[in-house]
Image (cartoon, rainbow, N blue to C red; front, top):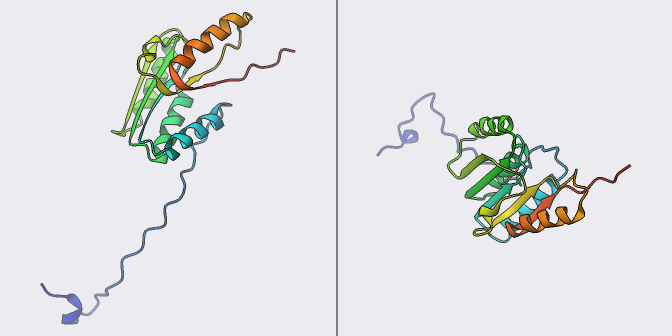
Length: 169
């Protein structure tokens, strides 16, 4: 094998390879949901515990915006296996969520969106998710019903992240 510099080829310069820039901390995606800081902190805590996989369930996902933000941030943190499940009652929102998820091409990510009653994720009790997202029972006047729903969702995952109830005027 010959080395170009030995032959003195005119016009050929040998330059050193450019160095790769140092890896920066992942920048969280922009998410305007009030639960986002808690979601980002929970994902960062799981990754700090050297976890490589994560399961996230959104019990009232709507169009899936928060769930997709969480999936993208989890991937940016270095999770190598991400399973996400969104459940909502509106079929039109399920279609929008599936269309948004179709733009995410990553073999490490599995996302499913299903039509169902928000707050009833009984399938998750056998194999609990790491994070369960829920809007909370904003329109519930019955505190006992709210607590029962929270208990059911809490048993479906290790961490339940819900909207805080708004004070009534």
